[in-house]
Length: 96
Image (cartoon, rainbow, N blue to C red; front, side, top):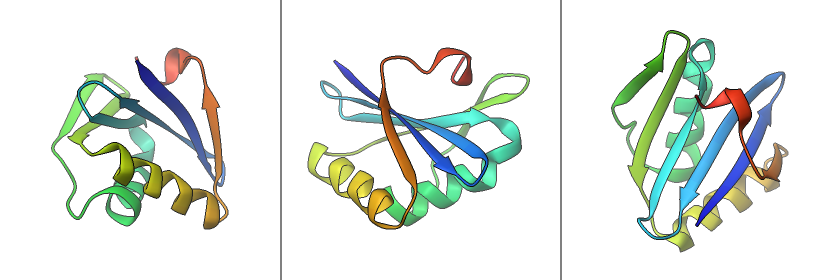
C-alpha cells in the first residue's frame, strides 16, 4: 500500500509517495523545481540528497528509504512549517 501526498510550496507542487511495504519514499515532479525537492528532502527527511532519476524529459524523481516513523515526523514538520500537505489518491501526470 502506498500513501501519496501533494506538498505545495508557494506556487510549486512536490509529489511525495511512501510505500509501506518497502519503506521506500519517492519525491518528484516537474524538473524545473529540482531545488525545491532537494530542500524538502534535506530539510525534513534525510541528511543527503539521493541520486536523481529523470523519468521523462521534464520529470524527476528522488528515491530513498525511510522508516514509517521518520516519514511521519517529516510530514508533520512540513505541516508545522506552514506548507500545505494534502493526501491524495493519485498524483496524475505530476509523477509520470
